[in-house]
Image (cartoon, rainbow, N blue to C red; front, side, top):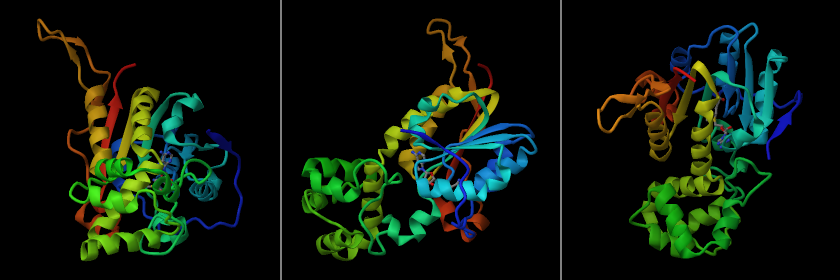
Length: 312
Ligand SMILES: C[S@@+](CC[C@H](N)C(=O)[O-])C[C@H]1O[C@@H](n2cnc3c(N)ncnc32)[C@H](O)[C@@H]1O
């Protein structure tokens, strides 16, 4: 269920060290103009949103979503000086259709984790610190990673590890060890994996946590729903940009953008029968410069793709 959030005023500080990934590339490619309407589907800490609000001043508007209520509240705080130009929803972007929003000039989604997910051990997203084994972006709904492991059988866990963690060699052995177990804390899971895999655990733990996170948040289903809906919410001339951080996400974005920017040809004449309504800004994804990667290690795996709507 998506809920609109009113003006938020707490003493919660917006994180000062969060660096929005690919910020200058995002602005150059999405080309915000004064008065544009923007949908930021993954507000996070509001870094991209703030830059987009400045670039669309004085009257541009921004609708912001986040599945994580804490991040949404931080963004609201950070963007409070743009009051009157912003609307916020606690909402998974996979449920975008429910909001019945009007068309936008610019749509942005910067997928995955934000810095508080990684920096705040209490959120349970990092395997380096003891915390409840949760991994949900939206802690008001769905199963935690702990519940998922307890309630799933070996074959289900094996599929999760293989399909979402791209673990092939170890998926079966790991699934036998993990399925049906009651791991309350991140460290309980880490110990079990270390006992099974020894020194190799260190390399594989990030993939296990990624797999569980994708499963509990149903991330790929939500991404597919967003990719089916969001481009249709662009005005003619509007731009949608997607930043992804692993191949499972980027492959989906690439395929969806390619399909939308491919004309339908007449099978007999080979002539264009139905011209594509969208064009890709570039076939290859844009990536961060070596300087940005040095400043912000998270930027190393970022891939940015942009699609422009040419006609309705
Ligand atoms: C990488 S951060 C975004 C950072 C943001 N661009 C900024 O400049 O601060 C991703 C955010 O998207 C949120 N998120 C992830 N999946 C989501 C989904 N399916 N629907 C809505 N929000 C989601 C996360 O909670 C997180 O706050």
